[in-house]
Length: 274
Image 1: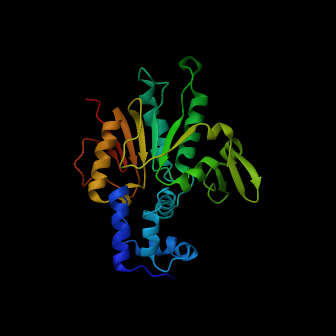
Image 2: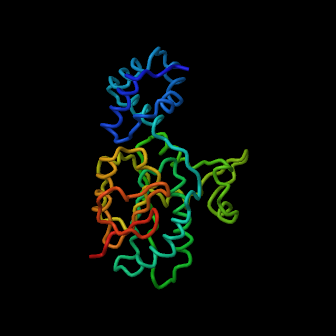
Image 3: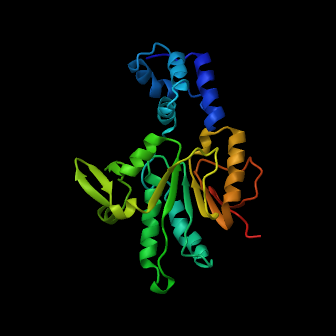
């Protein structure tokens, strides 16, 4: 395996940290595992030579490829789905009290390959189907973003293995996925059109016509340095409707950061209404 020197680790991780907020300072094994064979296959003898090539590629394609390889994270359907249940049981009743309750605004920030927004979308479509007729149509479209073009391409294609879908109830698998054979399944057009995907670097703002009712940013901030996390938390606060919710990963916490969110329970926070 092509070995990564301490200087190469410092150069690559420093660049990615400064430009994308992702902290790979202690991730030499990850970089070697995800880039080693690729770098050799491109004809480079060192990571430094490849890194210079990527930085000097004026099309931006190679740097995008590098970022894709280093930031795409493993996930699966129904991961931490107690958040989805809380969304239906607690958050939706609050949204129903709002004057614009039909205009549901949810952001899946750092959506990776689509498992989170599609899973959440299923819950929302099921909720909308049971909604009383006199409340009108509920716009259940979810905004989903990620920095990785590779992850977004997988999400937009919407094809997953049976193993990835193993935690999904059989009824939902039949209803929202098309069996392609060979243990692979594709999201139905109904489910696919319910998620709007967009490439986004979380260090940059994302266009939003109104504040979000809810932001899901789960198991993403653990890869960021402290200052970046602090900035993200404050940005999320500004982008959430008063009374709105922020969901983070079960292994994450806002305890060590100064913020104005109200703690609800582990990994769930709410913006005060006043």
